[in-house]
Length: 613
Image (cartoon, rainbow, N blue to C red; front, side, top):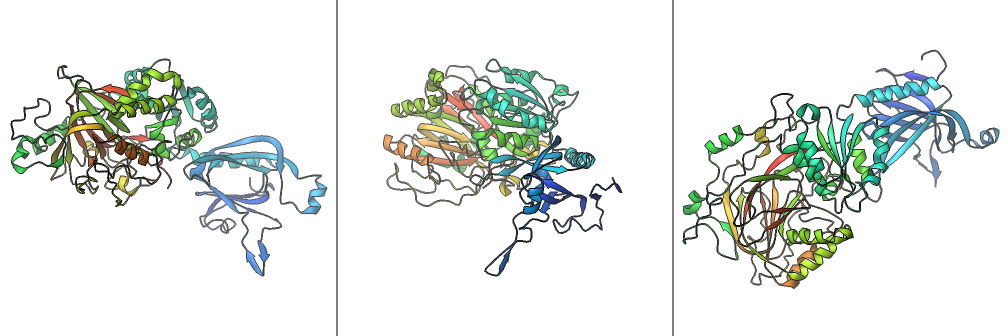
């Protein structure tokens, strides 16, 4: 466009007009009118767009008590924060920095120009994790100048290979308050504006998303950059299992030698007595509950299959394919932990901008559904939480009150709490010497029922660019050995707890939600390869109430009670001693008398970036 009087210039390495706005060399520089601001000098470089008002009464700052303050008019938007750029029709631009005389000549503050719009986001001042869409409208007298800027900006955005171009979207109309369809209608324009193609499937029955995902061939799946769930945690879990089950073949979790065929306690076994806390297995008993041998370890690694099919191979561990969640459920704990907020628009922006975070996944293998069942392994995957006892009773009770919507969980929780049922069970977990302190086994008190320990361990909360999640993690690796780094570490020992429990919980993430602002475990991480095993032993009603109240407080200490055990482990086993055994698996009922579980570090990628703290 040189030599045509369009006030636009291409900038090379030695160009200086953009230097006052940003240090990097400029790609384009021109003068525009910015809507609701006025005439600005606009510069585009590899970092983003930068502008500064021209001829503004306050352009040079103001003077107060002889001190010149810097003007706040200059602004910018990073390329990574722009999700769409589009031409707009000829129309008005509202000017706020016109000189008084010019304003009268124009008969007002509006002028008509050719325009282009930049769509991005800003962070909420009250909640940093919430992203608010924003637009910047630039006007110019020459349409070709606007067109050139739009083409140049879109060319740079298209180079970002991390941004999705084609997505498969599942919408659950019955999630939460049955507003799944309305939620998608609200965020759908963001995907259209970002030029993301979407194939939308409105589910009509439970399990439909699982069936569709599991029946898709790898060739069909490779046509998409990811899959999006518009619904709650249970709906996401359904899609996760449909994605992983036919494609990720892993050996069963490691277990103690007496697990599948429990031996009677003849006095010399390593099973602890009822209500005895977990302790290290004596050396003479270690051979009965061995750690994985080097031979078994090699065999286990060799038995992994991460593609599923030999033709049109699809690698689970690739960086391109991700899963997105747009919250429309009852609790939306996974979204809260991976984006920091329960906001559909924020989640949609994470998706179209191609954000990426890895997420631990637990493999749950049910060996027996009931005490009289035959041993028949059945596998499921979970991304956030598996709970027994109180948690299983709540999800079971809530099924009778689905007509109440999300409020059914509050009602069911109250009913289950009043019953105060406990269950006899045996739990074994692998102690690999993690740096997470055992909040109960290392601290004893004469009153072992309800004393709240006032000493709080240092909390390293998971966040954007988390150092713990990124520690010793190679995002480019497609090898399976990186998925279970703690499982094959030296010095791991099995430990057991047996007794009556009000609840048994296994949390992979903090499980933050509106009722529990810090979640079950405030410093649980998205991708560290551990789950947090929380055992709530039988205790008085009032003591358990104190524990639940601590969960509802920001900065509370729900784990610092003598009747609470907290173990950080990569694997555990569970055996019920009763006639019934119901688990809550990411919001879904899962009947299991005997099960084992292991964590795969960062097995899947999500369209998210972690919470902003």
